[in-house]
Amino acid sequence: MRNLFRLITHGAAFAAGLALGIYILPILTAAPAPDAAMLEEKASRALYSVELTRELRGSDFLHWGEGMISVTPQEIVHEGKLAPGPDYKLYLTKEFVDHEDAFKPIKSEAVLIGDVKSFSGFLLEVPEGVDVAEYTTVVVWCEAFGEFITAGQYK
Image (cartoon, rainbow, N blue to C red; front, side):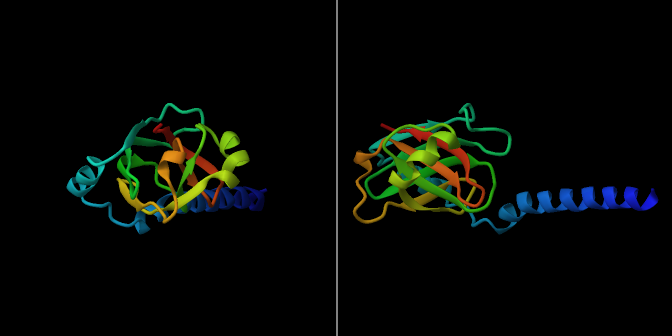
């Protein structure tokens, strides 16, 4: 009986430590956020912008984004906060999605903009040959866990 109790308590402690490590490691290894004044200056040249909200169907206490996304032909700027996590990617889609069950079927048609490495604002260059006017929505996606983080329809 004592061995079973130890197995359960040690297993629970191990699982809690592993989950905490998965959550905290991206925070500890995150790149520093770009300068707020620089983000603001870049955002002022945007053709499109959209406010991110935590009120999306796919958002919860671990998967969310807030703030403003500004889109220029050359750059995408985020001024705000994202829930920390590993392996975030920014995609553009031609239709609005608000949950992973809506994004997964169209992911192959989405265009990958780049890796999101900061949770307090980011600046990503739009890859050569991508016309942001052909898309309507930005999506932040956790590639490692296949989780929707946030999205905003800019057009």
